[in-house]
Image (tube, rainbow, N blue to C red; front, side, top):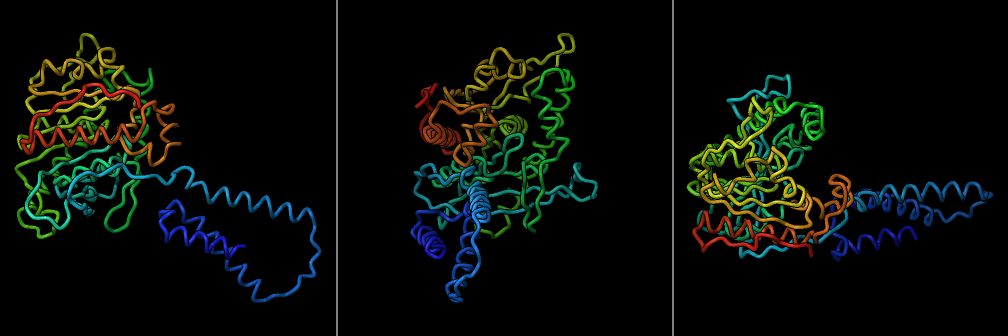
Length: 404
């Protein structure tokens, strides 16, 4: 029975019923061990003279049950799921790199070493020509693959997407040499406390925002400058596909705020997509009121704002979103989309990757269908970048997309 169980697992993997990944490693290891033990028992073929006691049988059954539960935990927490659809004509290739910023010393570590930034690219494979560059920044404790379905969809339509891991801001990141870097405890505590009442004054929070955005925008500027330089003289396929004259930036949550900031500062950035983030770059601290206020400065870069219910309900009531609320007045070209029934993480791939953890982190399950939400979001982002970077048609949307 143990050998048959292992053989059945192997057949399911090779027939693609089970898609091999990290979630099945523990189960595979257990089945291999049991199959080896079973094979050894059959080869020995010795009659057992041991007296079987009910207590011993019960203990073994309980231990095996607990072991089975343990090995199935990864598959339950991170269930196998279908990928959101990819509609473009190009096959998509990926590449990962670690870049070292020689102009900055890492502030989160006492090693005296320069700051490193890990990135991953999604780009058209085996294709000719050059394509617009899109640079993505993840959320407060996200990772560079948080919106991988969006990156695949964009790359399949002729874009080079570079997603950044901000070391010590990302939950974890892996460098080219295999080293792991986890989120920094001080930064995590700052972010957690920023969402609680009475921990920081608005002035203190404004100072934290400036610090967070400085690191994020420095990373993004470094990456964009590095990519532009490599597109001139590096023969790696990904760099040869980049059109350095057509650049867009986008991000989720804190990464969206950094993208808006970059869209203001850089003249070579022609489009911004803000996913569920406050406009930190457009906020000022008012000493008289002791609160945030919109700066009122004109914003010239076309921008698409995509909101979940979590942020939409705060527009007009939370001063952190004061600049978002009046964006139409200060922005030269701004478009706004609201996904009704969506929660903050619904605008990422995370609820597909782990529905259980997403539900826990965002305080409940979103009402909107996750595939409908992410695929519609991907379609809108593609349409917006096509319009702003490729000059294809005009950007239009329904404005509000309901639960399905």
